[in-house]
Length: 164
Image 1: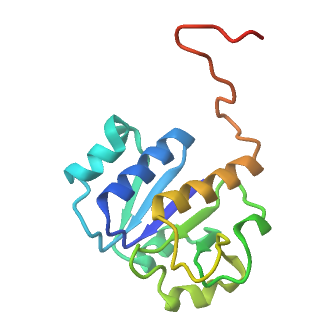
Image 2: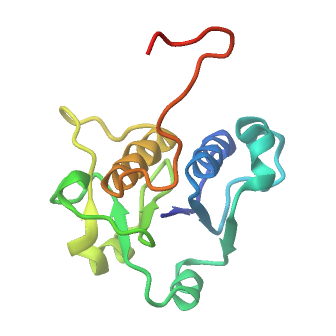
């Protein structure tokens, strides 16, 4: 899977998303302008020591991304979508794009992706969920559909043993 952040603004959210990407074997694609420097202390703190293991790509703008990924199937995560993120079938190399925290994905981009725009259902007129939470919700649905391929499904206690 691939996660795209279009003009991310908050370094801590980006760091958290980077950590989630490392934990799931997902590439992170950042589209400029960024509201922070990638080496920002807040990004590194949120991503902890995982940031060095992140598969990271940075693009000058959305057109740069499209030109370098011409066959990308992109799902646009937006509160403006007509269907829920659970109504689609995600494939291994798909991209899920999220907009910046303050404004989302620009409508000039969304209008070209009506069929692949999806939303997380919410009650009432709340503007949106936290960006890193939204990424985790949608990414894990996509990975669940792929049976969490290559991921560790069972854990063990550190000091004690489970009964079974």
